[in-house]
Length: 125
Image (cartoon, rainbow, N blue to C red):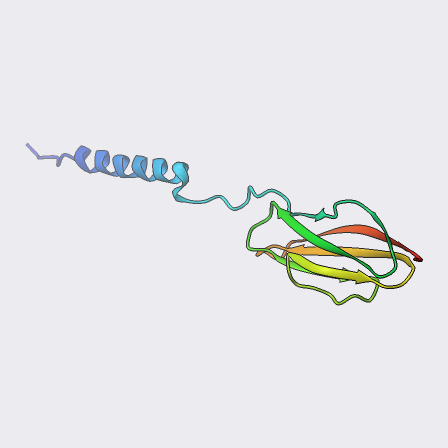
């Protein structure tokens, strides 16, 4: 009579290893980077359109949510004030009457971009 080797121990071991791998993968061992919230740029200070007088200043603060950190910040001021690459701009002066845009562009580490814009209305002194 011919002896047939017992293959069940190997099959059980293989199934056990596969089951362990599946548990690790579903418990976060393999991060799913496709389920990321959309990047959103916000100007939280001043937060809304602003009315000021010539020569007055405003501090601007940006905020990012969603996307994939770290973020880069870029502020553009239509008034001719210097652009900034900081999350918080410091003091920005508006010296001439007019209506100006302040635009914040935030880029995440995947290259996704979002913008936020507010208006600054500057009236004469």
